[in-house]
Length: 640
Image 1: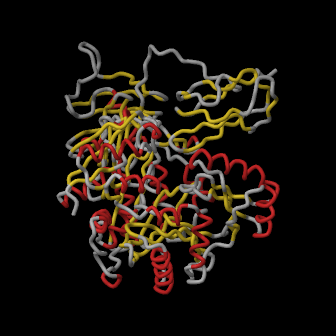
Image 2: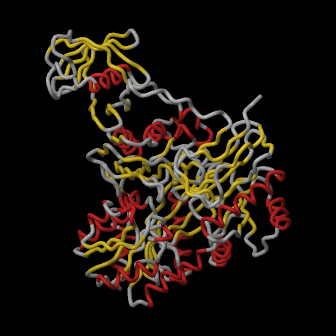
């Protein structure tokens, strides 16, 4: 076993690797950018080395700086985590030339699976079923359009070097193909430096089921499947293991195909074989096809660990240090069911735009496994993925585990930035998902219902009012009131106000929208005679009430002047980011919905469109500019 390793990554995966290393007695070296100087993974590691500026290209993508840090600190091996350099064969070669061990597959194996077209050809040769499509080298527009027509609509355009939904477009009819191809190529070139694409048949009732494999370069085993069908724009939201509705015959067929795929390239380490499954007639052994192989540890690996009892990071370290596979296929079994939910800083109501901000409050429930690289007080920066944490639960049955997930999400507390917490909770309550009827289109079909915001219960709003008045049970019944005045006053929060009357020690009456709520704090909150599970938290942005529901309230500033919002013709940057392209110039006429610019932020591209038809009065930004949230980018002439 290694004595010391360097982790060439950041955030929750770096912290996750450190956890296993501590248990195994392996010392760790973290690397960090300017933005991560005070990050959790830096505090957890035994040593830490600064490697550059906040942009990934200036830090976490600087292979030479990472290798230099490993050699300077005496690390014997480099763990890549996922993302950044984890699937870069040139980095693997450089690590090995430096006399270090790369904790992962060989550069040859990564290259074999790095391009989707070549990987599919290799899998066909190995006897692994692949989706009908075009994977050729020719990239002429006319050729790709004719191949798409031959395959039959709808089709998927996919970047050959892609992943995570980047460079992927669904095309449902011939007339949409040219624009989708241009968009996919542009995003692929930005994300991967390779604009080549392939075309695949789009499965109408698709499920995304992947198989965890592990090899030692000679043989491989599979650790069963994960269902990752609950997706939005090809990004996974909630994953589970095992897959609902899986049959022994289907599991055996998929597992054998995955092992054949891994052994065909002499795979060493943890990897994932992703399959697209036609779920229109249940799970059948003749209805699954190879999509791609991820030659690294996956974000959702904890659900596999939960149902198998295997520490995949430990296996990575053991195999990379020269040991054989720690288990045979017959040693592995499934125990219970597990779910993982990805908690993000994102504005769900605004189209799931990534969000930034300082986490004024962050608390997680006991009993759930939490993978996070963030602590209360940390800043969600615009430079990296806005994931706050992964919440993982495990139970004896799917129903029990899903109930645990709903409870865990209800007990998760975040203040200081908008999150997708309410959206995740809505998913756990979705009738189809609870019944195991999942496919990749579920969220898209039911998005309106999943986004429907439930009004905060009056009791929670009343408690927010008490907290704002200083009557939250912590310092006596008269806090927030002046001497010689009645213990009654109006308390204003952003968007509403209420009358508060103190009734006695830790007792108050709140009149809110004509409703009277008698509140009492005796260890716990009671409202109108009913116990309410709720916790009140003060923070810089205002007050938050957490419990069966969550309610955030900003304090009203009576001295603040109301500012007039931007004119309807002004396009603002929805987040901090890099302007990748500007498509209009002053004097151009545009239709409603026309593309104006592309903003790159948090590893994703966001197209900004015209809110109305009009003529461009000013272009206030140029391609290549870094802008802040709320920056004015393009102004249309005022409407007559």
